[in-house]
Image (tube, rainbow, N blue to C red; front, top):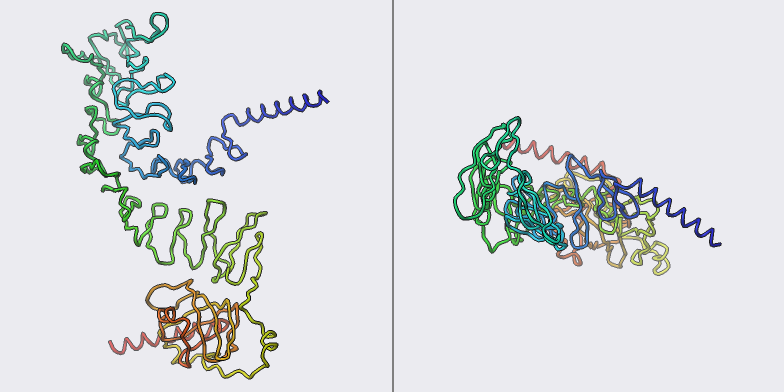
Length: 515
């Protein structure tokens, strides 16, 4: 028994070693391996490069989200847009300007610093040097030294590191020069003399930029513009400025307000604490009546909405939950569908009408409603009566009907009969109107004066009326239609199209005669 257990244990170790060797460059993601060209986000594996953009994962309020690096930055559970001319980084949940600060240690647990010396992390390991001192500079504990002329070694008793000088002779291309008195401009292999050193003060560290000698303790080279700039300043459209007092947005300078949490939006300043507007693709939009979907602005209150960073048409699609925190756009299988049903076995998504149907274990089935009365139940309760003539249920449309101001398409999902007429609940599917607010999806209760056989539950029909839907909605429990209002079943759709077409042509002819 003991030998069998040991053999099984050895087999597990071998299998683990093989898997580790195979996926040594990968990442374990919810039990699956993500390769170097993939990214793990929320337990799902995605392609790291999408539309020529490198993607990364950001966790905000416990939810994960993919975002394009270079366009946005994830810091402190915030996903902040970044302009091309900004040099931002995250340091311990704080957004910093790398032209001014550097991050000491890990970006998640480090601390920002602004210094000409090296940074030592919590483990007493040298991990960083200020951006303006990079190049030929290295760190020796907390001190900076030139690796060409100096060495970093342990001092007495190996307790502290110290800097010692190397020989002064160096090569500049094919030329020999004394590094104590001269400087090599490596780009052109040119030797230039070092400027005289003033007595007192900090020892300068000379470096050649643009064929001139500069003290790297005071200046740095802006690689974007190839300008030599005083440390603490930055360049905006070839103009030097102080980033602590100004902001550069779209090559324009703006004064910085220390009391506001601001960033750039296009060519302007965006106050992140102002909830009345937001930045969408470099443009300010009001949040009261506009939204931003994957950097695309859209107007709220219409048929277009945002779902999973994708704009969709509510009349033809639905926003469905595919996983616990992920949404997806799904086309409607029918115009009256209002919800989504996902199969746990196949993960396939279906749409259905949740007023008449229900989703049970990924299967759509008919919903049993206590408000729907069958003909058999009616005959058992009351003896059958000859129904009164329903004057607005018609199988044809005349010219007067076609001139009605409003045409609506309804879907009846519940219906009951009373002694004085018919009461039914419906959903507006399409408002065939020439102007006004779009009312698709509105629910309404309508009463009629007579018991009308033309009304059947779970069917669609058209309403021709001069009444406005606003009045119907406000008085939905008191409205009774008259013979001037016309209902026609959707099966007579060709009559509706013909009617609307003739009315449209007639209106155009009348306008031409008057003109």
